[in-house]
Length: 183
Image (cartoon, rainbow, N blue to C red; front, side, top):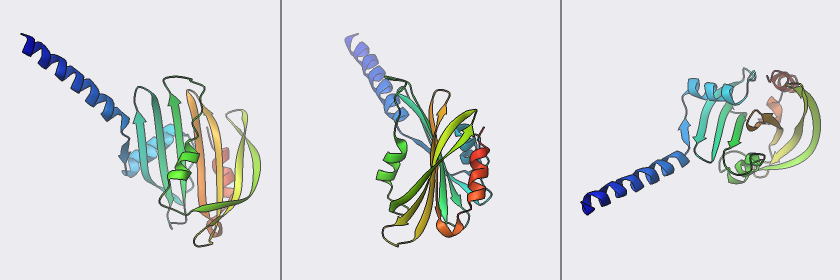
């Protein structure tokens, strides 16, 4: 009897612990249809034709929900990242600085030294939202880039959009059109 009860308790503990650990790991996909769908869930925006779905990540556990979709330029001249997050525990008004953590942990891509920046406001969902347009230089290759980024409010958290593109491939009209398409 005691052995049976001990077995049940052990199975419960291991099962709950295993489920909690499994829920903490991100789910990754490189299926273009799934990446596009996650991107649409994150931010309803018209992605420029030069970008195609590459990878997406979702985390949904007891503490938070986070989704990110990465789109790569067809000629490998840049990336467009859409992300959102929602805190389920603790301070629901807490804002995670996901972009900064991504920049610090990025092993792939250029190591950018940010230069001149200009902030422009756009009307998004009826609110003025600042977007930062920056010049940047790859510290290793000295290649020039343009970086456009903005943080948006989401119904239950925050969202962001970040574009890093080779300065030669940068099309400001297309970028403005994309930002103005956010619904």
